[in-house]
Length: 237
Picture 1 (tube, rainbow, N blue to C red):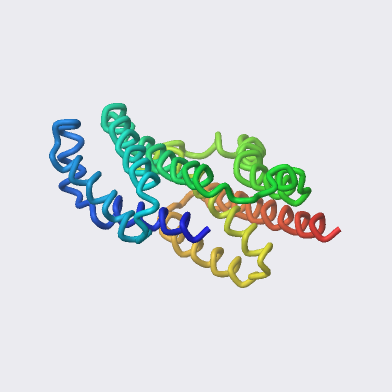
Picture 2: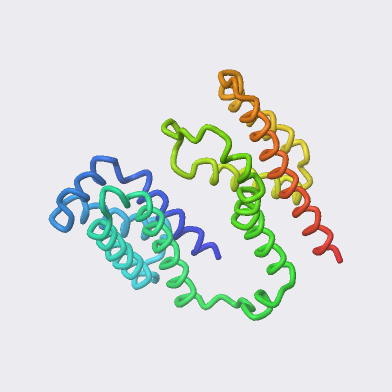
């Protein structure tokens, strides 16, 4: 396991600390002709070697470097100006997956995958997380649809889907606070949201907007809290 952690650490240092923004811009502009592209790969390989500090892992180091190179090349050729954010996530996901796969191949860790996926708690948590993020978000939207249609729908100053992701994040935080027994975190989150929303509510003369935000917030908090309590009950049974 320590080797896996070291490989992930090397990736983080190489991709985020030892890769200046100017290198990224140069790679995106010149692609395979970029000198900084190959310098980045060289530094990454040397970094993995230094952190592992064992020449016996030379084949693993070479394969890590090659996989990193291929993934980066795919990214810089596949991404467009409008898909940079998406490809950043895909790129990092593929890097971590390649590290994990190579670690498994070389070290063959003993892990009972069948028992893990047959664990009831695993499926309880997966179901709960899916419910509080996607399912409950759609449910709240539908429940409030009659009221939301009556509000001023001028969203020129609003980020696309920002409200949806804010709702997902707040429910995940509340779920985590309840599961871990940190109930005071819910109060902090509610206070923080009230402060950020104060400007909207103060400047708005529309009472409907205030009531809509309050109902949506209470629904979101209530669903996440109730789900977390149900999960705790099911896990303890």
